Amino acid sequence: MERMSSAQAIARLTKRPPVGASELLAQEPLQIDAARGFARMAYQGKAEFCNQLGVIHGGFLAAMMDEAMAIAATAARGFDYVVPTLGMKTSYLAPAGPGRLIAEGQVVRAEERLVFLEGRLFGGDGELAAVASATARFRKVPWK
Image 1 (cartoon, helix red, strand yellow):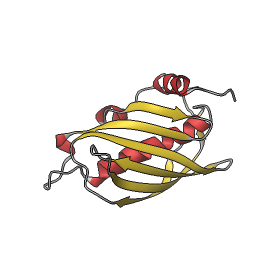
Image 2: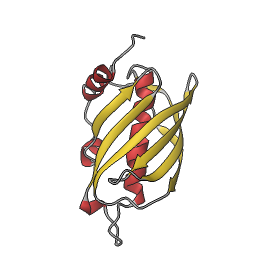
Image 3: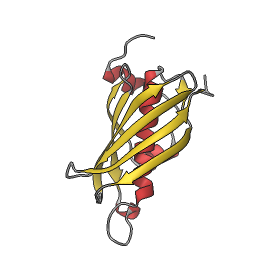
Image 4: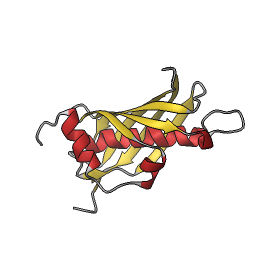
């Protein structure tokens, strides 16, 4: 597989068919390092994502990390795969309010069919708000 720059990886990612969840979360790719299996994505924590305490509901934070981890894994394989999540553990460390949030995904280990991932999510103040680990399965993309 050819070595892709971050800009090339982002361009390849944005050529894929749109995903409704990505649009809902207002995903913005910031950095993708395909060689090391890493992705940094920005999301918009909308006011309608908040619970009664005024902070973003944990399910939305988990979805952001899940997507960042998936992008890290697919980039490492040239975007020729999708990676359905088989299991994910999320820990919430600090509240994240509305505004711009940053999620990072990292491949920890990739095997032929399985990939082990880690994710981190930072609130608008830069504080680490959540971490996750996941196991996913490589599947060839259905649209090629």
